[in-house]
Structure formats: structure tokens, C-alpha cells
Length: 345
Ligand SMILES: [Zn+2]
Ligand SMILES: [Zn+2]
Image (cartoon, rainbow, N blue to C red):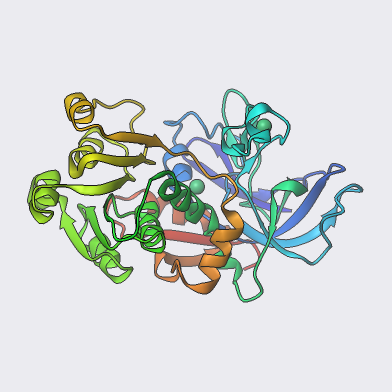
């Protein structure tokens, strides 16, 4: 089969590789669409330590079941499916409590690090265990279905927050996850949503996708602006979708006393926290990693348009042109949001 292989750091080769072998409980999926994730773009130069070549990246995919292991009885050849980005064991203490995103044996598709190596979906075929596979709603296209992984990350983060009907929320960082989080906040019942970013184009997209107000981080102190717009009180909750010191601090200073912040972005492994703000204002911080069981709800929300992913797909391109799309995504200010690659084109 053909695959886009990261053969060494910063270098791709679209090449012939052996088709993956199918274990008893596995399904082989013919990939129809696979999105490029920010973590792939940041990981390809070795900086994250989680894309060690050679590796076939890609964990945001949808396709058609093309072969079944002899015990993979839940599925049939021809089923239109997507699958979780995380292979979890289903047996450890965390999995048995439903916290599959915290599985002790967690392996992410298309990731190679010190602990594991698992080829992903920038290929004609990918093999996955049947228990992480989900059926696509009939009307949902493969391209839109391929965005369910980032949607699930945003929905999980919002689900961590104690959102009440009519709440005011701030989304710090209006990239892919932030723009999905703002739609999830709306679906969760928020009455007023403020989106923050440095990039004017992204703020325009935030408005288009339902942000009531936008704040340009270029115009000065974001938290001061949020306080000014909320009569000095602050927002009820914030979603932080960047993960660097100034944006993390802005999220924490933007919420009211007793407010909550969901932390999704993690560009920096370590940041300073405004400790006294958190302690004296009793702010609750929720780390949020991947998702746990939100996939069917997310597929439904995308399919119904509750979460509109169409405007977030910047380009759909053949997999063989993948290397050049990665190069474009690495250029700052490219204006690109999600790029979806299709092996069959
Ligand atoms: Zn991803
Ligand atoms: Zn587990």
C-alpha cells in the first residue's frame, strides 16, 4: 500500500510499504480521509519527542472497513467508520472506570515515542482494534468525520467545566480546538462567549461560528478587557487552548471568583501560574486530555450541524501531496486551519 512516511525528522516520503497485518480482534480500515493535527506539524521536527522516524503519522481519520480479524464480529466489510485516536486496553483500573483517556497502556495512533510506536492513518490502510471503532451517521462525509477527533477534545474539555445555563465563557486561543470549544460551550448552554486570539482572521472565524464578542490579544491585557466587559466580575469559565505562559495566565485572570478553567493547550511543558489569583479567588483548574466516550455524541453533533466543522476545513488534498501541505502548515500566518488528506485521490 502507499503511505506518507516521516522517514527522518522534517522529511516525508510517499512510498510503498507493507499492508499492516490484521490481528484476531482488529479491523482493517481503508482510509478515505485523514486530518493533519497540530501535534503532527509540531512533532515532525523532533521537538515533541513523540514522532520518532520512521513513522506513519495521522490519528484523525475515517474510512471503510475492508477486512476483519476472525474475532472482530462487531463489524462488517463495507461499514463506514471512524475510530478513536487512542488505543486503550479496556482492562486497566482507569479503563474499567470509563476513563479510557487515562489508560495505563494508552497508545496513540501515528505516534512513536519512548514507550511505544503505532503507525497511523496517512496511508491507504490502517489497522485498529474493533473496540475503538465507531459507525458514521449516514449523512456524514468522510472529510467531516475526520474532524471528530479534535471535536471530541473540545467537547471533553467543555464537559470538564461546571457550565450552567446562561453562563459567560472565555475561549483563549481561537485555533481549531478553540473554535470547536466555543461551539461546544454554546451547545452546553453558555449565554455569552468571548473568543480571544492574536490573529484577526481567526477572530472573524470565531464570530462566524458563534462567538458573541471577540478580543484581540494584540490590543493589550486580555484579562483586563474581559473584566471590563463583565462589570469587573470576570467570566464564569474559560477554556485555554494554547498552552503558553501568557495565555494560561490570561485564562486564569479572566474568570470570576469561584470560576473554573479547562486547560487543553500544552505547547509549553511548564508555565508559571498566577498562584495568588488562583488561591485567593478559589479558581478550579481542570486538565483535559483527549476524550473518553464522547465520540458518538460528537459524530451526532457534527452530522446535525450543532458543531459546524465545514468552515474549519481549509483544504482537502491528495495524500501524495501531504509533504507540501505539512510545509505550508509550518509557516506562521498561513491562515490554514484543518487540512484533510485523501489517500484515494
Ligand atoms: Zn490530533
Ligand atoms: Zn486501560
